[in-house]
Image (cartoon, rainbow over all chains, first blue to last red; front, side, top):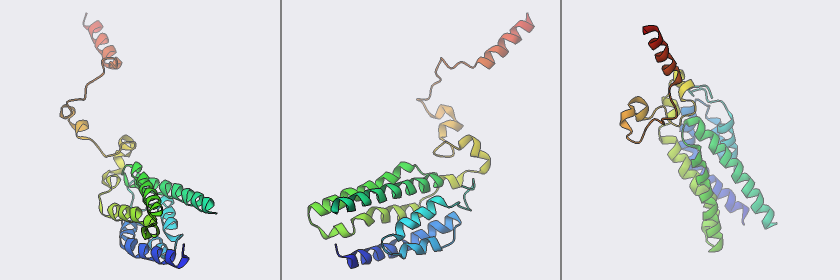
Length: 64
Length: 131
């Protein structure tokens, strides 16, 4: 598989999901930089998922 | 080499499902929706069988749809008050209609084995006092 094509597809995915990720971060009370990490090709989306899953959400009613 | 690549992808998918599980739990949505990511595995498999160029996009289609939906739906845990945390902690939603009005659920019946022993003891004590 062509690595350049993989990187381009990953960047298209990042452009598509960037806006909803900023919205999720805003609702969770997190800064916007986890959403920006999605632009790192291939490994960016899972890293963003780990950050959202493992960080404490300041806006969460029970402080989770 | 392809076997190793496939194995690494599966491990990555399992970790991502775990992350989605945690994120959905925090939002108060059923975490089982995280398993919808397995659909992308099926799409990738079918695309590779038919030698379709979709195989490049396949791992991204379902996560993109899930992220868009998740960003705009209501998050039930955000609608609960911290005071309700003790009672509703393990409930999927803040309350069901039948919790507020038990008569609203016609299938909800009390198991006769579960007698209210405290109320029975109280009644017996009252009877003894009266006689």
